Image (cartoon, rainbow, N blue to C red):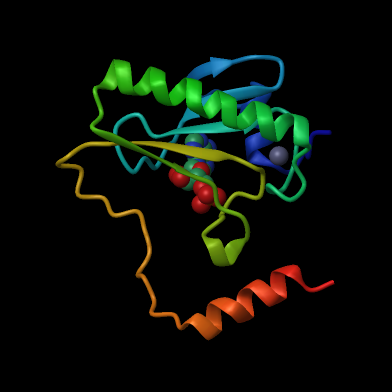
Amino acid sequence: MIDENCIFCKIANGEIPSKTVYEDDDFRVILDLGPASKGHALILPKDHYNDLYELTDDLTGKAFILAKKISILLKKKLNCEGLNLVQNNGRTAGQTVFHFHIHIIPRYNDDQQKIGWKPQEVTQEELEDTLQKIFES
Ligand code: AMP
Ligand code: ZN
């Protein structure tokens, strides 16, 4: 299941060269070409899935276990002080390449990056409303 118009399909399957950190039958892990920090890596499945909603359970499990493995490798080799996993789904959430991927972003005390959100105020009623929506049939 490869999408001929998808750049990450081409990279994951070796049609376009990349700086590859790791490869197995299911995934290629590459260095991001617009990195947030030194060692910013992307986990790419070799098959095409637009996003997390489409990814199979099997590959979802494997992808996050691989994210842990690569995180430990980067921490050890690059001596980062912290590390973020980021996984964007949908344009609104910042997804720009519509082939599922996990960002692994090593963090350094002086990296000047900010990955996060602005906390909003919420009332107990609003939290209750959210729960109702999640649980309603
Ligand atoms: P997202 O915004 O979550 O869809 O992330 C897409 C990421 O892919 C960005 O961090 C880009 O810098 C990165 N990217 C786009 N094209 C390439 C490429 N050809 N090789 C490596 N990384 C890429
Ligand atoms: Zn693809």
